[in-house]
Length: 100
Figure 1: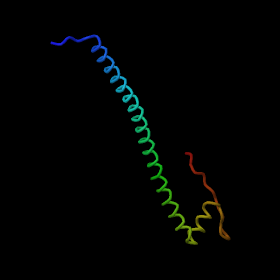
Figure 2 (figure 1 turned 90 degrees about the horizontal axis):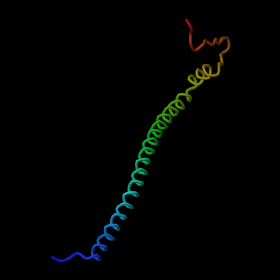
Figure 3 (figure 1 turned 45 degrees about the vertical axis):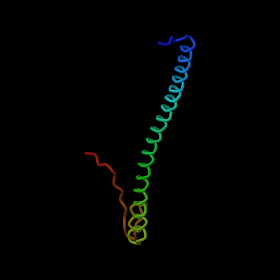
Figure 4 (figure 1 turned 30 degrees about the vertical axis):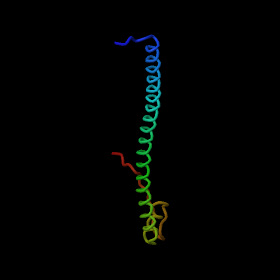
């Protein structure tokens, strides 16, 4: 059996330390990137939810545009929203909540 010299022990120690340093470096950076990936996924999900809500709102607005192109609906909407009235009509505003 061959003897293990001090030089061999030192060489193994240096290589072991170098490998440990490289593994530690990779572990730290991979942890950093994983946290960044998770944050990006969360932001993506929030943006997708915001996008779908904006699409729904767009559909509602397009629907309202279509309805407002009808003169009868536009007149009724203006009467309700801005308290306008026809000749001979009287507007009476009721409270939203009725207390008992």
